[in-house]
Image (cartoon, rainbow, N blue to C red; front, side, top):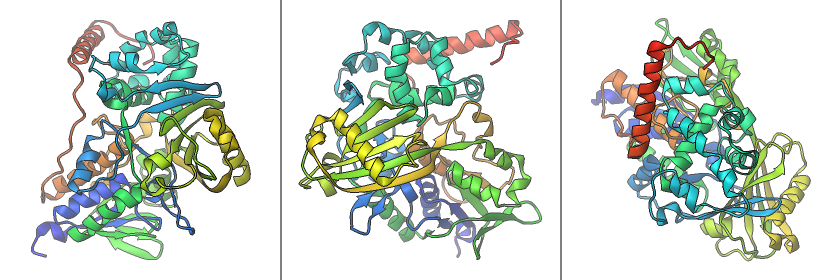
Length: 503
């Protein structure tokens, strides 16, 4: 107890990427840190688990894209080798294969976005439609992830943005809509233009290799989270499962001092929330403390998106051209992906029959279906993409319905998203929905916000070394120049012209 950091009790709520990241770093700095997880295993749905029959299942497959520099650094630090090689991918409609994506890092490097434009192999989309995306490059340059840029673009829908910049109807329907359905998990008319630009730039447009992706060679829980938790515990951190937080109590000075989990009480000198939008809304709805703060009450304006995760085992092996695939046009407002787990997961490499994961996003209308109806639909959809499955029979399945499972970046939602610091001086926020200027998305963003929250704890108490966060790769020189000119022009116009238009 001679270490002054050890005397500070830090509670972290939620054992996903953000919570584990914060706990890991604070434990390494000597803090008395306890991680509380509501489910029976760290990571919850992200992590995956074993069925009673011993089969591995997940609440959706998660990719790890080329720009995930901090997560790749973490697994190197943990001395893990959890990932497949980078994979090529396909995109399907009911008409068959529409797009083949190469390994962009293997192609000669071209200035962005030429590599993405030229190396992607569109089977049917005419060149004239693809060229209609060129005017959209202004919005890509204008949106620099700043607070002002989010305010300008957030109240506009992605569909309105594409229409305003002259994107053709076919390009919209066959390219941009599918990308948002599997990237932001909702149709463009329900997505913030700011979120759409941020996501598309980070994953696809910023640098040629950014769309390249690797996958976990098993569940994230088995390959990453379980050894990560062991290292956290070896470092002195505590990870407690089956602890669902119901309230956070304040002392007389307004500091968070007690976290309530049912009948249990945990005392704290600082608290980090690392739960999803739906998770924090549940805590706030039952909390007389947090309900006193407008910033927490306003979280009721945020929403989530339903996900359907299915895994099918077939009686025979069917050749699947690409290990990872995205699909569009099968159901209105729903996008889906499917994966050849015989190629991706070590566990299924020697199965005698194909094992396919199919995940559906914005799956509102699918969740009420029975398991039998879902299996029949998934079998039919996969067979449309890969005809060899017509003659294959499903011998086992896993159906997981995840209501409000992922964050919905709806138009106008930015004003309700929380920063890492809150009105409660020792309560910090993290997660993939938290406002950060790092520029990353999804799992990488969640992990980074966990490190940022840990750094705020260290800043508050003055003990320990802050986590080093690897920034995103800088914009390419021509993009930097274009953004500098655009910013200067925008500032000049604001100096001389009173702009009364809506942002």
